Image (cartoon, rainbow, N blue to C red; front, top):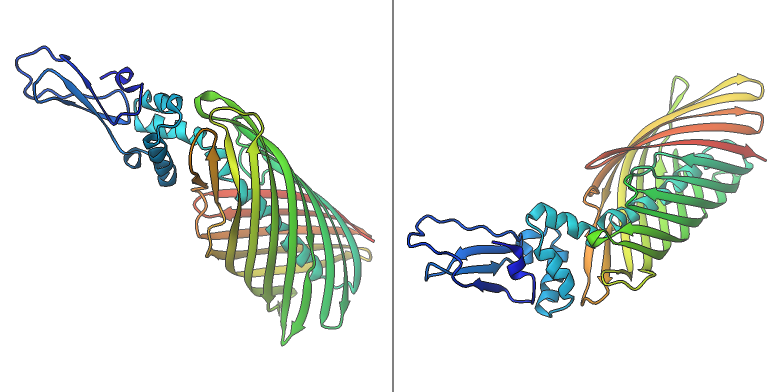
Length: 393
């Protein structure tokens, strides 16, 4: 049955009169051209009843299904529901709703931001583990394959530190320019992120303990392809507060340092945003707090090869497993001309993930060239390759 029959209004059932002109309708099967409706022959054998399914039956995102169900009952935004009724199968419906909800853009936003925060913390801990009692280091790096599609980031950070016996103190500041693109040019964003960290270290009973309070702020804009192929532009700002803790127990094996590690990290991720142009399906990124609470266990190894008087080569690698106790990847959104809110989440993120790292640092005098390959493994596999230049004053 044509979806035009149900396109207007907010009824949950529609009837077409005298549609079937046949004396024998036994075994007749009817189908609906709308994914939201079932078609059935009426008792008189001539009329057809079209009965609406619940959104929960056909929409994969249950939070979005509830949002749509409530707004249909409240008779909000007839144009939207008329468009949804015209979609013939469940796959088309959910694909259209993914665009409607901004899933491909907003779903991965927290992952990208938290990854940048975690990698800065890891880089600074690596610098603190060196042998210098006093240091000031400036780094510049590029990570062209960090995220999805054609995405990448450029990072610059400086760190100064001091070691006093078993204690160490450091301060680091970083600026990151993130360009995220889904590879199809449908969704992209550019953000500038500023981060500061105050790592504190202590050695006791063979353990190297590090605790790093960390803060970050970012502001940026995005473009996305929304429902019905419409273009939307928006802005978003974020504040990130973290306390990242690690304990390592280094052991020596034939010139290699091998260190089991344990981590406990807590991050508060606050954000808000909105789409700049008033359009019927424009989204509002509601002001919200998300948290990441994770533990991790790893094993790292490194070797420092002295090549000449003022040149050396460091080799390092390791693997760590993490378990997430909170839900940092879910974002809550609202929409113009609609009541309530719904949640989108990156379905590729799971509670458990692994990070595998390999890298080198070649130093000539005060200048160092670093290369790192980091693989993130949860329900998908992705690789982040970085190349850094570092100058030690």
